[in-house]
Length: 183
Image (cartoon, rainbow, N blue to C red; front, side, top):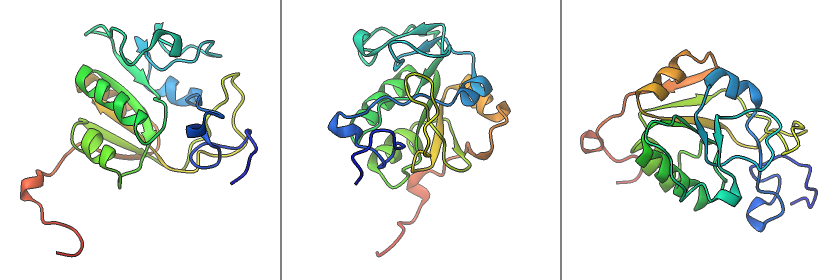
């Protein structure tokens, strides 16, 4: 694995080792889905507007108060535990959108996305995230991304955003399903 810090996210850098853990959402996604009332995972000095109210690492956005009527935008810290802590909080809040890797094979994705989200938009291709100073990464994210909608407003925004991808808004009851693979 490379020691260069200018590489993309998703395995192309080492965020879980503390070398780089803050990547910004491409502005076109925010423009297509906004406006937002709250970004609980905001950078300390965002290079472009994200939401009306920002909570940074200094504000401890995961445990801070999210007002019930606030429509949330969340690009959470990515990690095997961190992502799902944030997704749990957004699912509990029930009113917003999250951008995460489309790691459908993980227990967290099954529980917090397939199990709780009202809709998912699997984005076409791989995103190019941005550094905290606003510069676009030279490399793509290294993995596909999904937008997870919680609540009717979030589902409506996914349906009308114009972003290329596949929208899933119907879930099959697990009790009606057969296991996949070896039985």
